[in-house]
Amino acid sequence: MPTAGSITFDDRAVILDGTLVVADLHVGRGTGGSLELPVGSNAEMVERFGSLIDRHDPEEVVVAGDLLHSFQTVPRTVDDTVAGFEQACRDAGASLVVVPGNHDTMLDAVWDGPAESTTRIGETVVCHGHEEPATRGERYVIGHDHPTIEIEGQRRPCYLVGTDQYHGSEVVMLPSFNALNAGVVVNEMRAADFQSPLVTDADNLEPIVWDGQGRETLSFPRLGEFRRML
Image 1 (tube, one colour):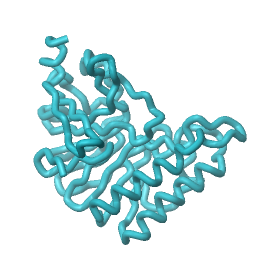
Image 2 (image 1 turned 90 degrees about the vertical axis):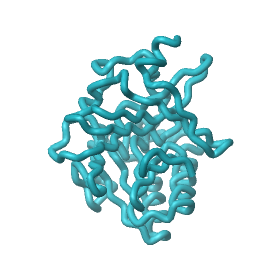
Image 3 (image 1 turned 180 degrees about the vertical axis):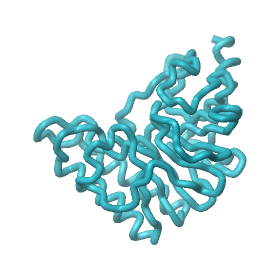
């Protein structure tokens, strides 16, 4: 399985020291009033989530923010989907931790488990990334910006990995786990264009694309160099 340092990349997730991390599931995106989720989207996410657990057998699974999409009431399909994630963890004997994000306004309606603003995996801090964390670490694993990269006119969800970011740390930004999110094209973005304050040097971010067909990661030049090649 493709790795970078001690991190393994797989299907919009990362695995670090026995912990599986996903971000920006936005369960409920596309609902309105009594509308159901778009056909197949909830089942597709639960299936991919379960497949990741089967492949990596983690001891712990962390949702790095925005488990839910913002809404005033929780549609039934949202509750069912979250229950599917919980069941997949229980079946594997893995604990589930949710780090709230800025969209998780109704989290209490579907989740009564651990929900801290950060969680730590050794010297790595996992948080959503929408605000500066209270916890310091040598590496931060975050979501929030939904990065994608445009290559030959085609958008691909990507990870962004960069050293010398927030307080000199390494930052690993995950793509949105929800395939419905179009994402933000990062090709020409500067640090000020990112919503996360943990990105302080966009030029030093390396885009990494997960190729599901070849089951491999594809690395591209850091954004500073990539921008000059466009």
